[in-house]
Length: 344
Ligand code: DAH
Image 1 (cartoon, protein in one colour):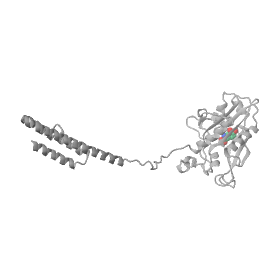
Image 2 (cartoon, protein in one colour; image 1 turned 90 degrees about the horizontal axis):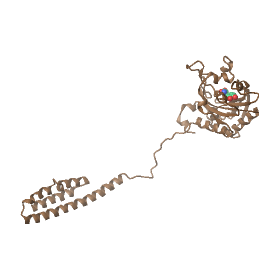
Image 3 (cartoon, helix red, strand yellow; image 1 turned 120 degrees about the horizontal axis):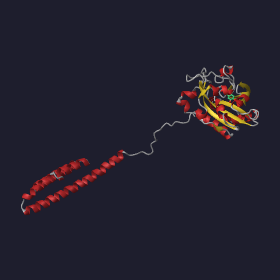
Image 4 (cartoon, protein in one colour; image 1 turned 180 degrees about the horizontal axis):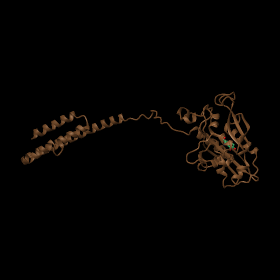
């Protein structure tokens, strides 16, 4: 039995010598030291020995088991350290590597231009009409009738309007001027608001014109408002938006809902006024229409034109952005080409 024990130990020591991983060690432990392992099988035979032999063989068996256990433990520790080091080495983090670039979206240039214009007017004391008070799908009543443009009047043809099939009087608004009516209905002056929004027209699309675009409507109604106030506010707006050095001109014009009416042009930034495709050779781009609110419009919403007066304006957001950033084609705003959008 002694030789048997020694042979088993020798085999175990050989196996251990060949072991190359923690896994191998677990297998060796199972093979020799588990309940069904080789040592236990031998120890079962102890009961048939004499007391004397039991003592010596038993002691030897215990000693060999301890030796094997401690050899296994040493090997185990060695492999554990080795495997841990290999793992750490493999998963090593290079904190100096550049990070992965995640593209980030940003605000569309038309939105940021709108925000900038609106905040200039807020600083001048105007408040902003909430979206739901100036809908894009409008009735003729707000888009034309109340703005002093009667049915069958040629002024309706100034804007080629998209009608809907919802009802014969429901249309996509051709201008934000209807917001003036929404702002005045049921309210008393002073009224001092701006209302940004999208408008639609059946235009032939080109570098200056698209079949939808954006406007910011403005309205100031109070006692003693004059054309001088209109000029003062709009000149101050242009100075703040463009800086002082941009040539502009005031032209008289006609709109059914203002009397007198005017338009403001800004010199074309693409050609410095020499004439180009963007300004169709004129050297100027119109940025807004304006005027003193027609007494008929005030009367329509129940404001007495003998007591109150006001001015109104409607400006084109795309035009203002084009003139500030030298964008030569309005269609660029709507194509959503990231090479364009990224520049803002
Ligand atoms: N609604 C006009 C347009 O789209 C622009 C305009 C002109 C607005 C005069 C006004 C105004 O408020 O007073 O052509």
